[in-house]
Image 1 (spheres, rainbow, N blue to C red):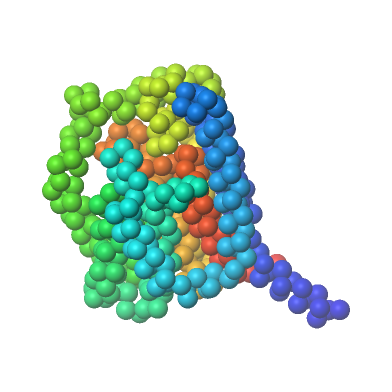
Image 2 (cartoon, rainbow, N blue to C red):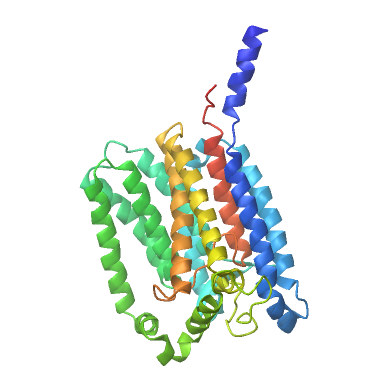
Length: 371
């Protein structure tokens, strides 16, 4: 009986899950549904005659996302290292395909029409680059401190980031941010991190300033009141400013009534500020901060470098996307068109985000509990 008891304890240790991470994610999903309905009811009624149109579609995506998360979490996280090449090629292939046969919305080709729904390949590219880089870097732990290894990582990431950047600069920034974060975690030399970061910033500046419409976004960012395309940014700032400390109350916001275009998407944080005020906005930011902290705990206690890199990639993706979204809404950076994780409307986004959460949970399952 004594041996069986010890074996049982060892078995339970292997199946440990970070329940606090699960709780935060579920709370963000539920909060997102409430805010989404408040934000999208007007648009749903005007466009589709159904105020719950966006809520129903997002609820279905959330349920499917939870199922995907549970399925991914059941696998050992080491399982994904066998698909690094498939993930990389599939990511590049899908992002290239969308340039030729993708549906154009608001002047950008970002979606593939699957008949019954639309699919955004750039979301798959984020997950693909995490699996790919985690595998590559974990296979050369001793070499990652060398400059040649840094160049190798940059060369491998550049094709996917370059293809994505043609129609979706914000996702390309996230992909490069993930790469920089993984190099930072794996490399014992911090100078590599600064070199890589500087190279990405320089390349990004050339990419933005070298194209007229991207340069126009930079000018709109500086003076949104002088340009017709600055209308969305101005309305978002009005929403943020009118919210005050505690907001107008959930559902009582005015800017979502046609003033902020597609408020349920990229600009949903401005409606949170208007209806829940500074207090609500800080609470949302704190939730994401706690989520990032749980990722850090899992990564620092992972059984091997590969597991730590997987979780670091997920952490980098979500944290960078949150920062970029809030920065865009507050006009701290030029408008790049990026959603707020777990809260903005978007089925493809939540499905791949939940798959990443599943991978992080898979890594946490391997962390032994201390008695």
